[in-house]
Amino acid sequence: MASGRRLDWQRDGLDWPNRDASSFVSAAGLRWHVQQAGQGPVLLLLHGTGASTHSWRALLRPLARHFRVVAPDLPGHAFTDPLPLHRLSLPGMAGAVTALLRRLDVAPAFVVGHSAGAAVALRMTLDGGMAPQGIISLNGALKPYGGSAGRVFSSMAKVLFANPLVPWMFAWSAGDGGRAEQVIRNTGSSLDREGMALYARLFQSPNHVGGALGMMAGWDLTTLNRDLPRLRVPLLLVGAERDRAVAPSQAERVTTLVPGARSLILPNLGHLAHEENPQAVCDLILAEARRVHVLPPA
Image (cartoon, rainbow, N blue to C red):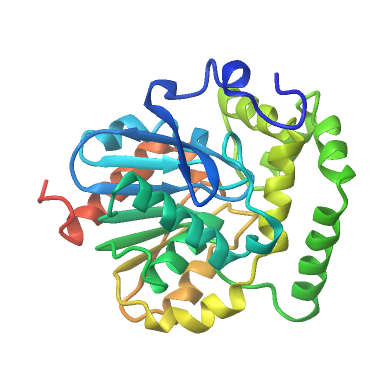
């Protein structure tokens, strides 16, 4: 069980999913936890806010039969150091991941970003941090809240992040696992016991909770939306029918901003679709990678 300010790899990582694929790398002034497996074209997996490499646990090995898979914990999440306050923004996060890729000496041919991870992937590509042949946005959190709701949400996240007691209070209340269950249920997803226990472990860490709040506090999607028409990489926007965190209609709306973008909706799944039905999402990734010629035809 996590305790103290941070997750400790020697304690909390002993039974971490795909532990044998893990390593620690220094880049952009941070110590990163990264999982890598397989050979072939590089596939970059970017998790969403509040998650970690564990969310790809059932996909890493199947995808590693076709790709060299690279999956980091994003800054401030799980076992990766947080970004300093002045770099807590979408461009700051994108720049940090770009520095990590350079440190690893990898150039992604294909990228899958879940939720906020999709925004990071798109920002990196638009800023020249990488040049993949295709991107999948999986339940991508790409549209800003409109009007006063957006201002209130952003202000609230900033206030919560600025209060050092908030992550401790959240972590304390998550100690019995009930808070984690509530959070997951509110995404529209239903996870197995292992998945729920891993999220409960993360939510019991004030450092991880603070990292998630900090990510939200520095998020600005208005500029990203303004820049999306410049994207010239094939983009598949995947929504999930039962997603209560990001409306599936958002995938269809973003297609109108990006030339040639396509969308599809996964039936009977929620925001954590890749954890609920990893086989379906794995098949989707392989099919799209073949369509854009990252992989040879089946």
